[in-house]
Image (cartoon, rainbow, N blue to C red):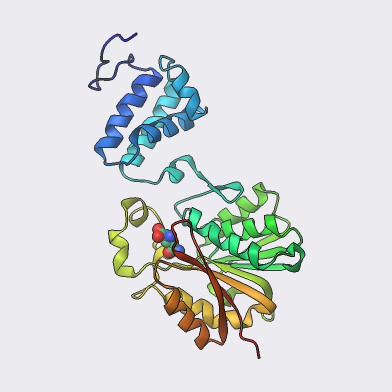
Length: 301
Ligand code: GLN
């Protein structure tokens, strides 16, 4: 039964102050801001504000929204209309088999990046073979922590230039019970690794977007994710050059590096890798069919 449109939002049937009213009004505002799935997002955000599951909201649209939840929802909605990513509003994002705390200091982990974990698992069917893992540009810690959950005998080091990323990755490791096996350091690519340290598995999702392309990315990325995690310099390859220079000195005998690639970068990165004495050892496509995870090994002597 409907009591007619409530005040303030044309066509919203449920009374002011109810779940149904908030969802309807928020959906209209999100649609007006060209957000792709306005109703779904309204539900996700209101559920987060109310501390319940999105599906619970559908059950009782006449339920009142408590004032503190209404205030939290209004704040999140304003940020979402400004195209802040959902993960920045809820503070978490799922990656691999767990949830990670995220912040505007780092890249939000993407499903594409899980391709690197799959590639590493396929390359090391013997899970005990990986003892030491390095993650260059660790951000939230996503890649290192996924590797540590899958290679149970391994310890790892995550490096990031941004001290807030290092702090965030440490919190994520601790929350997942991996704090004892993961160390994190602030520093610049391989230079932060101690002399002589060698790794069975080196992972990296470096910044690989061409600098001039960044303003044209969707506003969620261009305006809300850190340039440090995106900007690959004029040709998008600057970070690969730095990583590949250090890589031969970081890989243990029989070690494998798995680097994330931007679309269309495989050939160029393979050329750079060969120039550093590394051997391309295959590439795994992501779910969209894009060459995403490049495997590199020492060139056989
Ligand atoms: N995959 C990200 C994007 O295209 C970029 C991540 C990166 O530069 N490593 O939005």
